[in-house]
Amino acid sequence: MENNRRHFIKKAGALLAGGMALPYLSEGNVLNELFMAKRPVGIQLFTVFEKMNENPKETLEQIAKIGYKEIESAFSMREGYYGYKPKEFKSLLEGMGLKWRAHHAIGAPFKIPAGAKLPTGSNGKPFSIPPTLNLRDNYQQLVDNAAEGGLSYLVCASTPVGTMDEIKNSIEVFQKTGEACKKAGIGFAYHNHATEFDPVDGGKTPYELVLSQTDKDLVKMELDLAWATKAGKDPVALFKEHPGRFPLWHVKDIKKDLQTVTEVGNGVVEFKRIFEAAQIAGLQNFFVEYDLAPSMETVRTCYQNLIKMEV
Image (cartoon, rainbow, N blue to C red; front, side):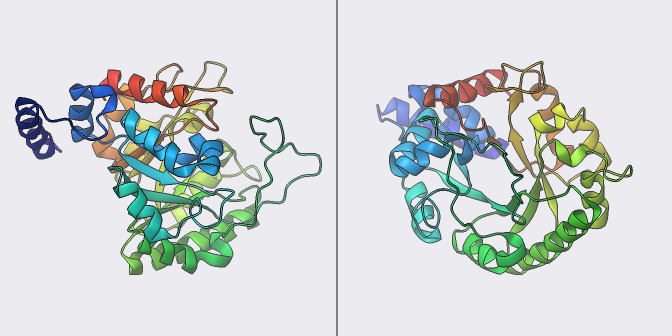
């Protein structure tokens, strides 16, 4: 990282001396670019779910202009990857100075309880989620797509873990997906919500069982910092218990009520302290996430607040 930073300082000095503009430089601020040379800031595209479905190219251009450098994709209402095939989406991102690092896929389909409320869009109508690939039934296809897109990681976004049978089935899926990912030259990780820290049948939590019953070299973790905080878990303690197991993070914040997601830096998550333990965690990439952000201004605020922290 330090070599990259020194290289950028030399490059930036030469460009500025020559009066040249840097492409996609965040708000024209050289200090922001210096920060990204040290630790590139990524974003999970579920943050801008609606906008990515409306106009992926325009939305990504706005993301790049704000200063984000790395992308983690998720499911969308469009076919494939926001209407693109893996190589096409990778090319689109690279043309904007963005790197596609990871993709979220569902572990297994969920049974939606009768009367459950689905997330709604800005028009007030519930999202109609189209059929999507899942790791249980389509893991090899998802792995092949991830490899074709040049990703570093395929990530299980969520999976049923409410019973011991569901946990057992999920662990089996994670193991075989991790093996397939290794053969393809990419990594596999599991992303948490808060429910993974709830004990099942009066025993251990799903998170504990996944950590203890999967191969640490095949199944890594993408720790969502806000959901872990909501569950009363200390991310730094988790890192120390399982060093090197957390190469990916979701940089998300939550208010004092531990219910309401807010802009990064405006809640109770202790980002400074957590980032100080990045080496213990084995951090490689992190992605800002604000579930279904109300506007691009929210996306910008998250980025700017993170920059100010100098994590």
